[in-house]
Image (tube, rainbow, N blue to C red; front, side, top):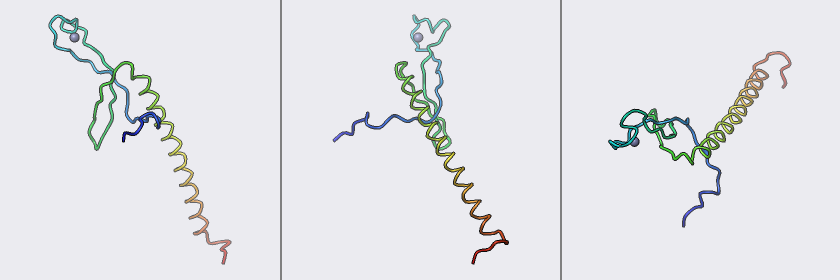
Length: 102
Ligand SMILES: [Zn+2]
């Protein structure tokens, strides 16, 4: 049984970069000067930078997936900040000497 890949929206972490390289063919234009550039996704895994080479056609989808992740991350951070505010308000109330409720 294979899971359908299109069911969940793609989410990616990292940043979009451009790799420059020479293909090695002596007749290619890259041998003389201009290297090939290909889009790639650079991300960090356990302290190491990893790179996934992309096809130019994938770039828009990857951008979208990175945006999706950042958006989710932002809302998660906001929730966490609200949580901290709630917690510190509760702690303040608990510590506050005056108006102590029995
Ligand atoms: Zn080349």
